[in-house]
Image 1 (cartoon, rainbow, N blue to C red):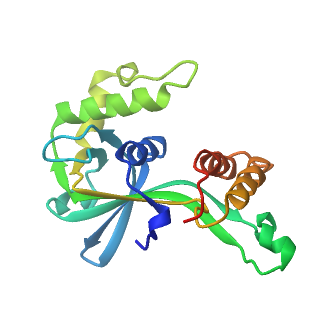
Image 2: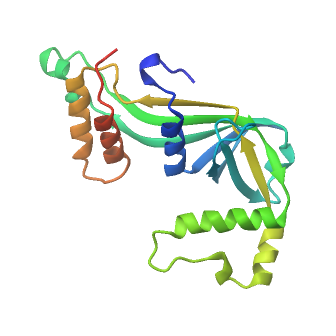
Image 3: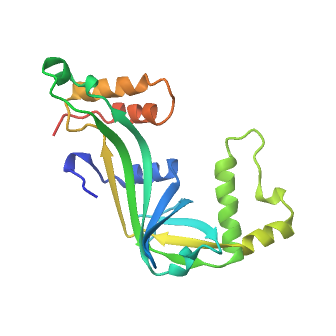
Amino acid sequence: MYSPASFREERLDVLRGLMAAHPLGALVRHGADGLCADHLPFEIAAPTSDAPFGTLRAHVARANPLWRAAGTDCMVIFQGPHAYITPAWYAEKQRSGKEVPTFNYAVVHAHGPLRAIDDAAWLLGLVTRLTARHEAGLAAPWQVSDAPADYIDKMLKAIVGIEIPLTRITGKWKLGQNRSMQDQATMAHGLALDTQPGAAQALGALIAANVTPAS
C-alpha cells in the first residue's frame, strides 16, 4: 500500500496490538475467479523462528474453498480506528480557507503462506481459546464445554483450520503526522467530542497519543 514515511508504523508490538484489538481480518488471495476475500476472526500467536512476525490462526467452514488453497500466498488486512476529518479543525482553514477534508485511519497488512489444518484436537484448542477470549467480558461467559461433547465433535467435523506464518507485516497510521502539532491536537479534541462513541473517539485517542512535529 502507498505509505509515506510519516505515516509508516514499524513497531511490531504496536502492529500486533492493533491486530489483537481488531481481530476480524479480511484475508485476500487469488482464487479461481481472481481476487477474493474472506472475513475471519483471527488468533495472533507469538513470533517464532519460521514466523518472525507471529502466526495467524482461524477456521472456516469445510464447504469454504479457502482451505483448499493451502500454499497460496495471502494478505490479511486488519482495520483499526478510522474517521472523517473536517477541514474546520485546521488552523489554515481559519486564515485562508485553503483546506480540504480527509480520512484518517490505522491499518495493518499481514502477509504469509496459507496452511490448512484438518485436525480435531488442534481445532478444539483454537475454538476454545477464541471463545474464552471473546466471552471474557460477559457476566456469565459461555464455554465450549457447555455444549454436549457429541455436538461439539459434530461441529468440529464441519470446519477446517487455517494458519498463516507471517513473513511480512506493514502498518500505516494516517493520523495527521504531516500536519502541525496544533492541528493534530485539534483533530484529537474534535474526534473526542463525537456524539457517537466508537471509531471516531478511538481514533481521537490514538492521534492524541501520537502527536508529533510535522515531518
